Image (cartoon, rainbow, N blue to C red; front, side, top):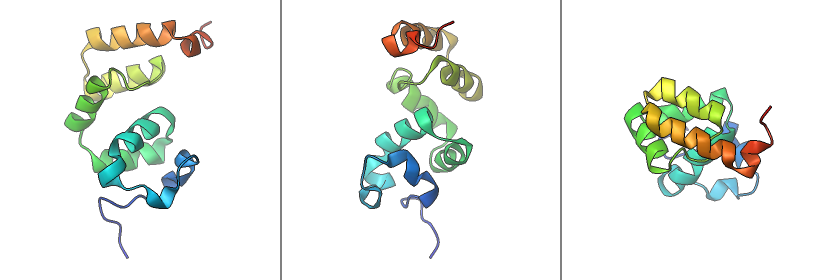
Length: 107
C-alpha cells in the first residue's frame, strides 16, 4: 500500500524513540514531527519533511517558533535556504549561543 501524506515513513522512526511511533500521525502531530526532524533529522528525513510542507509553510513555522530550538548552524542553513530575515535569525542565533546548551559548543 502506498504512503499518503498523513502516514509516517519507517525511516523517521528512530527520531521518535521516546514516543509510540505507531500512534503518531502527520495530521495530529505535525508540530512535534516538524520540530524533531528540523532539530535532529538526517538528510533523508528533512527531504521527507519538505515533501510534506512547502517552503512558505516551513518558513512560517520557524518564524512562529522563534527559531524552533535550532542550533546556530541549523538556523543559518535555513536562513539561506528559506530566505529568512537576517535580523530575526541573528536574534535567534544570539539567543541560542546564550543558552547554556549553546555555550557548551562555543570555542
